[in-house]
Length: 428
Image (cartoon, rainbow, N blue to C red; front, side):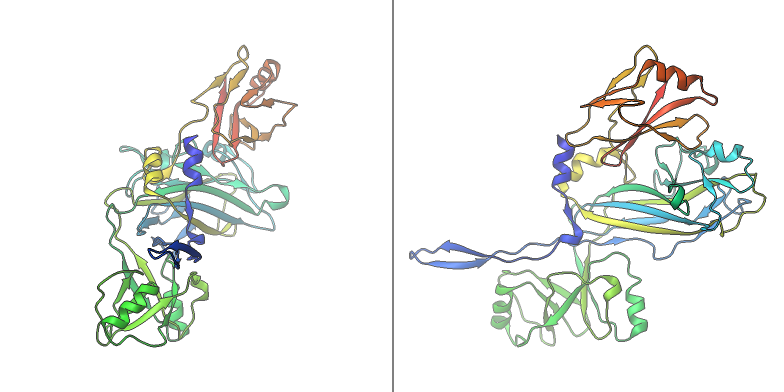
């Protein structure tokens, strides 16, 4: 199906490495020559904050509507190709006596638990600087909003951590112009400054052993490899392998770069690196999110001891323009929401079967029974509370009846799929 085809064609940024192999090509005189085949790497550069302010904000000071204060985590794609950005937020809770995270804002508001219960979530921007439609504010956001993802707490032995995940797709400029920058830290302090540059691909540069002294020698070097010219001012010019008619620049030094990138943490003083970036796209190249939350009144005093840290991990993947075009309409300001697998299907006691039209390779990986009040869901088991055969998901009418009679009613079934997408069926 289309979805699988586009996923298969994505190119992981971490695997964008140059390779060479010998390819015999027949020459006109009946002999043969070897032609090196190289991989053309796309420039990947995504600008994100290097620091982010987050605070437990019990009295909503300066942030009306959320008891978790957060500065925005802005994202700008400066790559020469579209990118997929998968963000995992991991919160660290008090390890000695972790609070209980509930799955809805209402559950936190209604909680009287003295040890503390809270609703913690990530809200993605719906457009620049906005998280909800006009006329509404942060206080109107809850777990039912499409741009809100609730943190899920670990199991009983891992209750000191909770995670939330969101995926963004960001456009590139239609006609990107890539500029390259030289990075040459000379001591530990300059290394630390260099490491503040948010996600970029750093390539270590090595000066050509015998430097060109004229056009012909430079042409010979370019015929054999990608070359980076760094002039006396430090300006970098990329000359792609095979470019004809190159001109030598007096006072410049010519470099090749490593086939693989150097991680930011491994940058070292005394070495020279180059990295590239393109301009931001006029539309579709930006996204952002922040953290929101509600704290129960059952606990009188809240501090950062309850939620001490949030780790943000982002995995960046390059995407072809063709595949981005197929998926962009399923995104809201970069946040990927996708098309519904269930098409808002409902089940009743008299119609207890729903057929899931899943893409090839996507399966149901988890089924949960969700409390109406948003408290902890119950994981159901195949062959007991439900059956799953192929794309047919079935729950017995008697089970539905029993759940609906429960107080408070278990009236939602949450399905999580193998691609990490989740959808909910409302029982009626």
